[in-house]
Image (cartoon, rainbow over all chains, first blue to last red; front, side, top):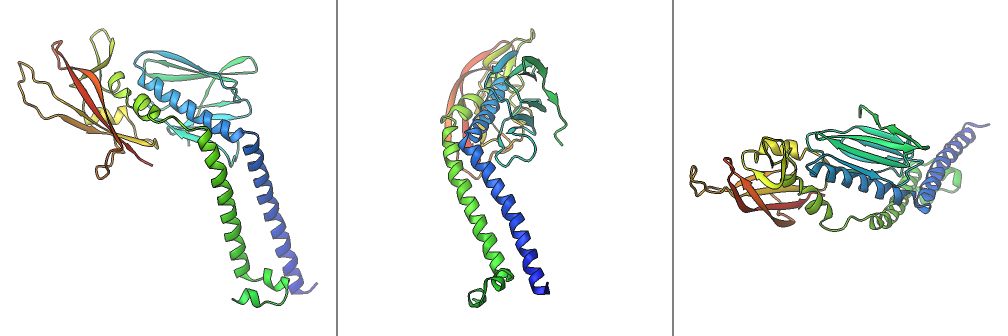
Length: 143
Length: 167
């Protein structure tokens, strides 16, 4: 093969690989939008952020159950933001900010079917239901 | 342009101008698709006007003891009663921490005259850390509150809350 020919083959392979990655990315994004997953992630992130703001504004101890089924998603509460993704590198992950009062919650829950937020002495704790078991939200470092 | 004068396809794809235009075209296409799809999603999950800023975020200022709500010696918290000694810029930093939230607030509290401290007094003005002094408030609300000035004295007043849209 000539030098010029090998260059064209190389460029073609690169083009195919890039095209495949972009194409699969578009396919995943299109599927997420069409299935309503993006809308669910966006709405749930906003719901949870507003719930946290409401809990902080409420002066007494309180428990709130958020019973929207988020099985298949990871809910991460970190850096004063609620992020909902399908784990890993999710191009359609949704996030929404909230403002804690004298606190800095750092939680993650995988595949929650419902989430229970509890405020005692101004500190928020979190549990979630998954496969009929109640688990504590994992505390993360938010790095 | 040189790219349009090339005689065959293989010459065109080995030209850097072709790849530059290709990347720009794909990028613009992707951004347009993402923009159009995001409009429909944002509309479906739109938060009603006044819910987040007026009802949820602003209420912490006069309801939470970590903000300015009065807490008595039995640790009871009195919603809607502001302890004037707690109404400071320093407490505001803890009450409304820096965040990417879309709203900023400026509070103005009148200082009531008492027999031990007769007036007139200038009102106290404190802001959240993301408040922009150069910008005009998007809206201003007045909340009916009671001010606790010590020795069990309660005065009915209005707390003025100015709200800016940050983004």
